[in-house]
Length: 235
Image (cartoon, rainbow, N blue to C red; front, side, top):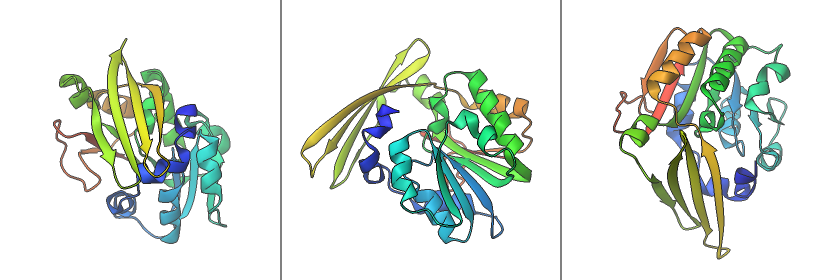
């Protein structure tokens, strides 16, 4: 996926791993879990989970991201280039305690039918009482308020400008990455599927998930339609 290939070497500057995300994965779990991270990017989260004693597997469709992640592989930490819709083919004999999917990965699928198919495959790979934890942008807020983009991310190394344009039910996500220390810019565009919270709950229920909790942050703050994050835990 050229969008992410072009920014792969700068990804950890744009989205550095924060402890609240790690804590959300590790909250209320036993030791020695088997965890699958879908859309793992450069693998920073899976590496941290492995440091806490868990067997972690990361997958991403972008080969450049996985090339970076593979430099950190260990006996209990592995990475693969896999499409999220093909997880049942690679891991058909594996049962995971947790499957996680962060970073707005879900909305790169092309339809609600694909999302339902993905949810069913996730459920088939989970152990009994296993957890599916994922996070996207709160598209209820984006659509209701007709947001033109997301807040710009800026630090001493990069500036990442993010703009939205609604086209035929999809969102065209246009970005401009300014790499300060290289004095250059990378412009990108990709289409996203803006799915609402209630639509996600319906699809999770159809896929067979029973306990579904909705949050507005990785700190488990109560759902708030006015906040940008949408974080979900399903069992």
